[in-house]
Image: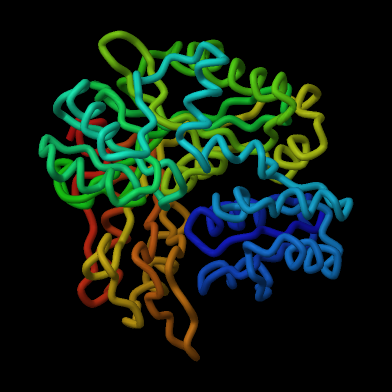
Length: 416
């Protein structure tokens, strides 16, 4: 099978790494990719938001499966263009991707599917914003209705900060605060059958102890030793299957990766939000634990044959990933700095630890930073403690001027 992956972040590097290890994949392409992905896939330039351009590239390459990684191309309808060209595509249609593209749409779907979530108001005027903030009180949860690369949510005790964020958005969802630990659960679906993956937990705040501003994610781990063993079954029954059934009932079937961001509250599981694609950085740890070859699973989703897929197989290993971010992230990040030590990790830490590139570019023989989140240092081990130790050992070999990372990824879960 010839596979084309669309995107250029650490999520896409994780996907390309897994696909490169799949014996059924005879050729692997990525557009536009990054410096790390270039080691496992052939890179091609493309405007990832231009569905016709992506479809043309897929046809030129003879791709038999296209995997759309990021949310923006999905919301722009790129998967529709690829399917219209007769090429199987992993990723939801533009209409179904509104589950991530609009928080208000997602709330409406959850109401129709009777999925447990936070009470909320959709606001478009200052008066509506003030009334919603007053109704819920602190801590205030304010979400930009549209795509914001994981940074459109403000959770704060400061009503003026909450109000300022709300007023800066065209339309916002203001909702009650959900207590309890958060879990990310991915499921692959073809619009009817739903196949859950292993749960993970990510770390959204920039600094240790969950301090600092929200980010796209600073690290993740899997499995979750503290979670109820029945959690996945419960979320399948109460969240994932009902949501897929509701979207199909509405005439907008969802095929691809359905990502449920969950809060395990004192009143039970509640959905914080849905995403329409693999999460970053959770994908890095979930795929590190998946034993079943990836390409066949993604193709079954694209072709509507998940019901005949054998059960997924998982490694017993734990996995931890730690994000190295640029100076000043999540503000305007500094880019163009050289990254050193990547060869040391490959020589000394493989196969248990490896580096997935996010915001990088090749400049002659040098690899330079080219984004806010630059690298995801990922490791596996017999338990979270060993995986954590290996990840931070590998991270210590990497040098990037002004870089920042959290030191407490999986610390509590590992019982350290």
